[in-house]
Image (cartoon, rainbow, N blue to C red; front, side):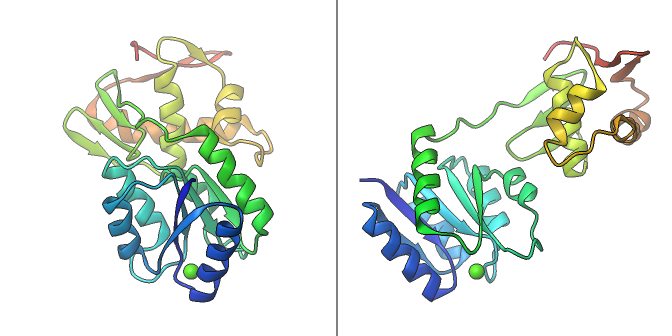
Length: 225
Ligand code: CA
């Protein structure tokens, strides 16, 4: 029997989710705020975690980040609000495996949880080191030698893609498809804007050249991942 931790502060929703999941054969524990959730997740092993974004005190993003930082890679399904106030991309960026928008049906919730269970816990992604940069995909932080470079979420994604393909020429289209996903209209100028911003942060202050422009083709990071 799969054991689920539900972290949700609205008692009525938490109780309903518990009933729904128990009826589908899950064993369910409920935490009513972020701190309690963090504590419960550290006290015992769960097969999957259902995590509400809007929680008093420590919100869902921070709970997710703290679990990942602590090396807990239990699959997390994040519940996001319908009004779009919270960005679903951010849910995935903080280390969640999937998200579900409220209100949801138990059929969909159960199906999503089963899919996560089949996939199993992820390995903590390994740190990428290339061209004097160190990039940690788990915490989404970047350092040039010992100096941390603060990047926005999208800048980070562009850099991660380039570093993973270090030594190869990467086209703007490939970057667009990898980083902007389906919602993107497809303007390669956006890639140029982001590469320019990255150079201002990872290269110019350090007098280095990490990202080379290959005229008519795209970009290349020198080195090997
Ligand atoms: Ca809530």
